[in-house]
Length: 171
Image (cartoon, rainbow, N blue to C red; front, side):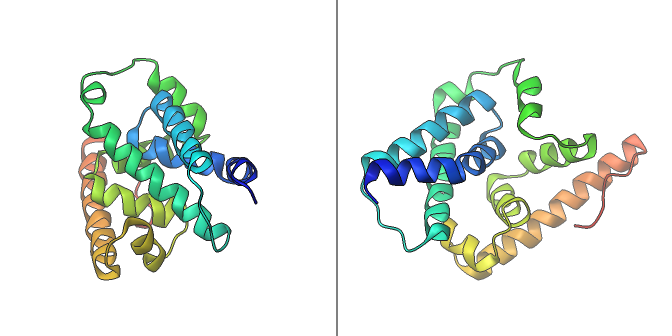
């Protein structure tokens, strides 16, 4: 495949996955769209060879995560906020109130935990695959996943006590 067809194929196959990942990491629909554009532009302009579709998907997610991290470190991101983001963000995920609340709680976790929880639960990657994508040791990923779940559970239980609602299923 040439660069044009690789980028187009990747966009058609993984465009929504990259958008969901970008939104999960940066929390802004508008910024997520920009990141998606940057990710696929990077694929189009830089020749890459992939072993298979999973390798391509992993590369796309790794680049997405890196671009989100760069965005979070930028001055512009730390100084802006859009009121319209809440309405737009709900359009990406047609999920229940409990699901939105869980996503919000995950996004409030430290990045290192939110990243592995998203890749494990929402994208279905194994610990080994997450280690490859994030370029971390498998034991580190396992520990981050365990600690992330514990932090998430503690936050949800704290909120459960104050609201009187139950949104904890099985973490």
